[in-house]
Amino acid sequence: MINIKTVIAANCLLFSMIAFADTIYPIDRAFILEGGRFDFKVEFDNKLKENDYKIMINGKNYQDVFNKKGEFIANEDALGASSLVVKDVFINKAGSYTVQVTRKDKTSEVNWNVYAPTSTTKAKNVILFVGDGLSVAHRTGARILSKGINEGKANGYLNTDDFPHMAFIGTSGTDSIATDSANSMSAYMTGHKSGVNAMGVYVSRAKDSLNHPKQETLGELIRRTSDKSFGIVSDAELEDATPAAVVAHTRRRADKDKIVDMFYNVKPDVMLGGGSAYFLPKSVPGSKRKDDIDYIAKFKQDGYVLATDATTLQEMKSKSDKLLGLFHLSNMDGVLDRKFLKNDVTKKFPNQPDLTEMTSAALEVLSKNENGFFLMVEGRAYRQSLSSVRLG
Image (cartoon, rainbow, N blue to C red; front, side, top):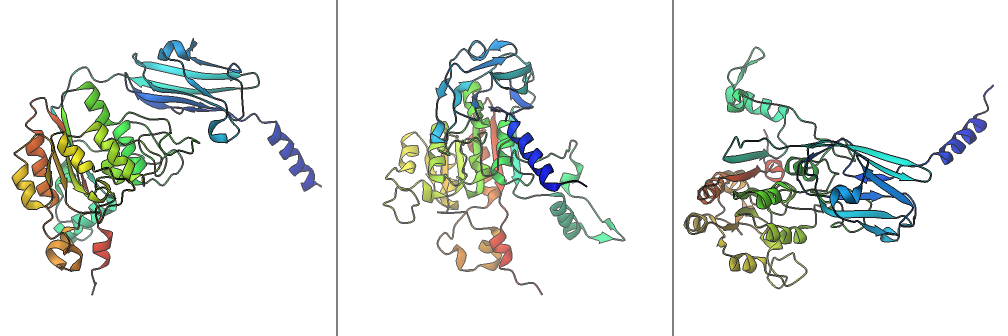
């Protein structure tokens, strides 16, 4: 007869003998753009001295590969463990790379696939439409409602049904099968996985939400490598996860005041949406900032023209090649509220532009650049509006 206490004791002994692996970022099976920027980090599982480890990349010292020495942190965030961080590095040759971290008692390893960009540019202009929460079920519902169904077959097709190239993607994050807008949009904008609530970073153990290993975003890549313009359009707050992920690096998608500063550092040519509360200094009614920085003034000083409603958007779109449109303190109100329900929700901001108007204005500004442009357009799911509709 098996003694359960003996089995438990044996398992505990075996568990205590296991040497836990150190954590390496970028993570195993990461795809990295040749020449793309990222932060390299190794998190050791206990406190070390600086010479207690060796880090090799394809048999070479990491310093020779990155041409840079990392910062050794003996006791990171007082957590009782050491780490090494090398910021803003890149690999200039495509291929397979094995990273080995060796200590006296253990070896940890990850593998990276560094891929080369295509040799020729296939598109001058790119527009990415993101439907918030859009799934196969939503498309099926739209097809049935718009085309009808008879004997189990739809009576027609949506325009999207005839796209020449279509695919499904896996959206799971590094820490959860169920994703959210932050890490899923971050994957689109960086080519790397991330964790729930995070964007533009690998989720590490750092306490500071802005101190996690960064991944270069598409907005930053465009600024660094091309003469193209790029713009962001959303009927959500501009600091919300989907629009923010084009430029942002943070563990917490709620760092909206800090995300505005990230927008300012990268300076998209067009930014249209809600969220003016985080652009306004705290002294202005409706502001959600905790400081006196006036980002609207800062953007205007850098040559941006400002639109605050549908009328000024039409007036300003032709007057500059830099356009900032802020049409609500928070998320913009949906078409259902503004044009059909005509309820009290929209009284504070009665003249908000439609998503189509914002997209058209963005295209007019961006198309002035003969080198081309990238435009991200998000359509937000209006849960509040829909919940207010009475059925039956």
